[in-house]
Image (cartoon, rainbow, N blue to C red; front, side, top):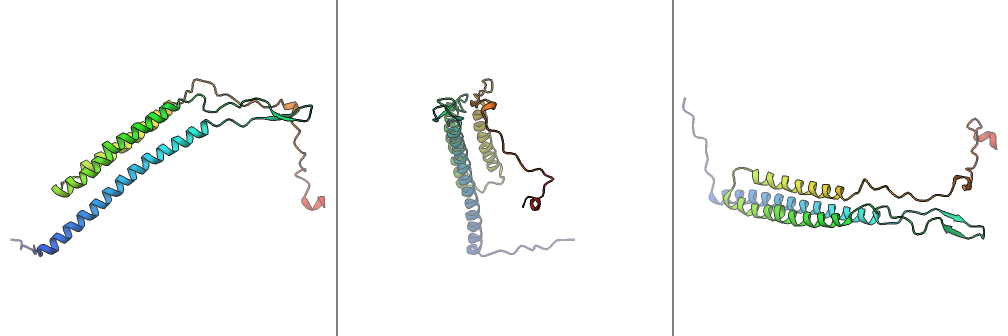
Length: 183
């Protein structure tokens, strides 16, 4: 049995418009991905900056009243929670991540758009490789930040007043007494 040819040619203008529309959609999706990758890098950098700020904040201090009636801290100055963190590592890893994301992912994605649109690449391996590279760079950045923490050094605990000097907690009503019975 011979198959009939069911191919119906289209006008060149209709064909060109359709192909250009596909290219436009593809280019838009790649630009969205490049923007997201840049956003990941900025979010990670902002997160480590916030972590740096929090870890460099002095711990809350315990205060007590002296016999003269003045209130003062038990320890001065207060210990810093992040004293065992190498913050230079945060800066170095964020700088490396920003550079690598731009050079190895974003710039490559933008170049890939033009190459793909010009040559109509038949497979999407290059796009897959760029997405994987972005995730690997992020993973390396977080691994470098984790190493910045010196887990072998003891954490300085805040000084608290001795338990005898702490005012006793107010007595709570017995659970057997109902609210109405107290009126």
